[in-house]
Length: 524
Image 1 (cartoon, rainbow, N blue to C red):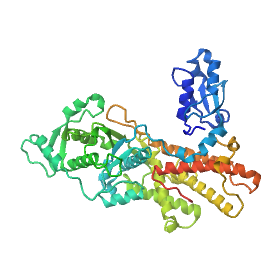
Image 2: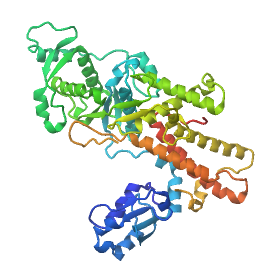
Image 3: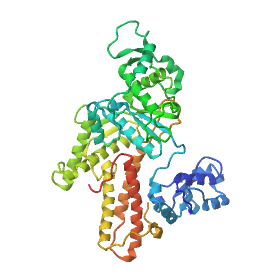
Image 4: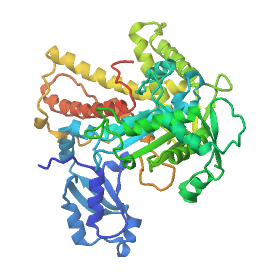
C-alpha cells in the first residue's frame, strides 16, 4: 500500500488532469446533504465549457473511475448526474489510510524549500502594555500565530524586538504569546556615525533637540523603488533619531546573527546572505506610514540591508459596547476574564474566580476568547469587537470558548472509556489495523512571499475558522452518535472505530490549538 498521505489538493489535481488541458473544473464537496452521495463534483456548467453539451467522453469516465497516483484518494465510482459529474471515494479505504496514521495527517507538511528564513518584526512590542492599543494587540497576536505556523512548516523564524519591559513580558505570558526577552539594547554606534555623515548638511547649523540627529530625504529612494512598490507618495523627509537608529541596529543584529538552534549552518555567522531572508514588518494601519520610513531608512543607511522587506498591515479594530472611549489591551483582557469568571459562576454555582483549581482554566478561556476574536478575521480587514457576554458562552459556535469546551468534551469521553476499561466493562483498544472502517460509512459528514510590491497578506484567520468548523462538526457528531454504548461484545467493533475517528479529531484539534499557543483543557 502507498505510504504517502492522501491529499485533497493531490486528488483535485489528478481529477482535473484526467480531463485534459483547460481550466480546473472539479470542486471538493462540503455540504452535508451532498456528501451522502458524492465527495467531488465537476459542475455541469463547467463541463459545458470543456465538452460539447457537457458530455464527458466514455474513455475519460473510465480513466476517472480508475484514477491513481501519489496522494490521490481511491475512487469508488464516477457517473454523470443532473448537477454534473459526480465522484465518490472508497470511504472505508480512505478512513483506514487516514485514521491508521493520524499523527502524519495532523502534522503540517514541510515546505518545498528547506532552510527558509523569516525575520518577523512587531514594532508594537516596544511600547508598555498600558499604552498598547487594541489594533496593536492584534498585530502582536498575528505575529505570534504566524511565527508558530511558519515554524510548524519547517521555516526558521526570528522575532524582533526582544522585549525589555518586564510588565510587557508578564502581559505576553498572560496572553500565552511566546516572545524573546532582552536585558539591553543593541549598539547603534556604527549606524549613528553613518547617519551623521548623511544628515550633517540637513540642519544647516541649527541646534537640534536632544536625541535628534537631523533629517534625511527619502524622496529619491522612493522613486528608485518605483511607484508600483507600494510606498506612500507623501514620503519625503525622515527625522533621524537615536531611538530610530536603535531600532535599526536591533533589526540588523537579528538579521546577521541567528541563534545557535535556529537552523544548521546558519546560526552565529554574520553575512549569511541577507537577500535569502524575508523580513516581515507586522504593523497596524495607523503605524504603516512610520514603518515605511523605517524600511527606507534601513535601505539608505545600511549597505547590506535586506532587499526583501514586506509589510503585513493589520486593519483597524472597532469596539461596540466598550466601557470607556478607548480600551487598552490590558483592560480588554481584564474585561474578558471577568466575563469568563461570571459565566462559569452561573454555570457551576459559587465564586470560582479565587479557586486555585480554576485559575489556569479561566486564564486559558480568556486568552482563547481573545485570540479567536482577534484572529478569526483576515488581518488586512477591519475587525469589529462585540463585548457582549454571549461571545464567551459555550453555547455559541463562533467563539474560542466553544472550541475549548469541545476539547474538554473529547477529554472527558476518552477518560470515561479509560475508567470503564479499567473496571473491565470494555476491552483494551485493539490494533488499528484490525478495525473495520466500513462501519463508519453513515457517520462522517500562509504567507504569499512572491507577491510584487511592498505589502504582503497572510491567511492567519484560517486556523481559527478551521477549529471552529471542526468543533461544530464534532459537536454535531457527538450529539447524534452514541460513542460509548452498553458493554456488549457485538457493539465493540463499532465503538472502537468511532473512538479512533475521535482520536484523530482530538489530535488535529490539539495541533491547531498549539499553533495559537493554547493548551487543551480536560474540563470547563
